[in-house]
Amino acid sequence: MKKRISCLLLTVLTAVSSAPVYAGEPAPNNVSFTIGGMRTPAQDEIYNIDGKNYLPMRAMFELLGGEVDWNKYKNEAKVTLDDMRIIIQEDGRATINGEAKDLDVQRINGSIYLPVRLMGETLGFKVVWDPEERNIDIRKADSDYILLDLKANVNENTRILTFEEAKKLAENKSSTLKNIEDSVDYMKDSRDTLSQTITTLDRASGSLEMVLATIQDTEKALTVQTQLQESISGLISAARAMKRIDVQQSLTKVNEQMVRDGIEITLLSQINAIKGTEVAKQLLEQSIAINAEDLANTKLKNSLGYASDVDVKKAELAQEELEKNLELTNESLATQKEALNFTLGLDAKTDVYVESDKEVSDLSNFDLETFVVKQRESAPNIKVLDGNVTIAEYANRTTDALVTESRKGVQNDLNSAERSLKDGKDTLEKNIRSAYHQLQQLALKDKQLKLDVETAIINYNSAVVSYNAGMATEFTVKQARLGVLNAEKAVEDNKRSYIMLSATFEKPYLIQ
Image (cartoon, rainbow, N blue to C red):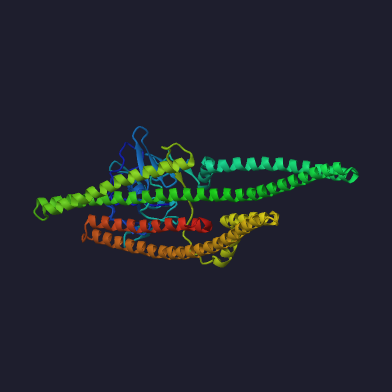
């Protein structure tokens, strides 16, 4: 789950409260926080009461990546933090996902304050106090990213689906699968009819053979002989037709699986595209906020004679470009979501989020050679090609040997089917080995990009230390923070590439 860190603390909620009232002084020497490894600027609003550090309620939850909505009529705060829903009343009574809690709250200068350690641990965070650095380190074991939030747009109106649930909806929507179901039913009816025909002709042939054995009249015997030959010929034709249906039924099952696999890949591609666009949107929003501050500073410098009109114009153009890119990104995101809803058979405006638990693997325990051998024999496209060979072989065995042209034709068909099967297996193996190599590269890149994130965090923390010491500006801290977001975005982009290639690797006939 992702944590967004707010470097600026907003004005806390105000209301008349029955909570304890404290009019003391802030904790000395300003206390800083490290959230998931990233330091924040020192907090001026923190108070130390009886050895406990207290923060304003809104500031507390925003540090942890949550959102606070104050209901002035009920005098209570509604907090959304990851998958937790928290209600806090001004007297300290609270519910966390429906479970009642009594919180230690303080009223300080008209605002509601919460104890940092107790509140953090109540919500599942690990809180460590460093007295020398006067820093509070807050971490959560299952946090993948610090700044990126892959559920940024998920709210109480969002329909959340597991991937399997989404896949089921997409399959139910597929007209191709419906056509295959109709085809299966048609072939079943045709096979039942042929089976009855074969039974009837077999009985008729047996009866004619018995009649033929008792007839003495030559002319009558010739008539019965002709009827018997027609019956046997019909029996052979019906048997051939049934064989073709049996092969077609087998191939239809393979085709159905291929269609289902294709739906899964399409769905995963759409989900990944949406996540990628949402990640890009977060980066753009942060960039716009920081660039707006830079623009304001440039205009101020210009008014004081320290920046030229050209500098202002460049800053304005940069801001306009970022805002235009954000507008285009929002349009693209809306289009992508509508396309996903169409695939799922949902209304175009339905707000849906599909969960995916796929991760990057180093493939160290993967047996490539065994996988290649298995796929060469059982991949769906190989089954189709093998079925074509079976049909060609059957035609070759049952073609009249005396008709030379017919023999040549079916033999050519057989040779062609066998060559296609061999080429298909070789191409499949080549694609598997190539994809495996690419997956290894993406897995290695994942490790390198995560090191880049750690480096970006170190740079950010260094900027915060400089800021706290009065040697850097808040703008410098925000730029360093944006560097962390960029680094995390690179990890996520690489992860999505890995997930898509991994999904097709598991179904290698889909590899292009």
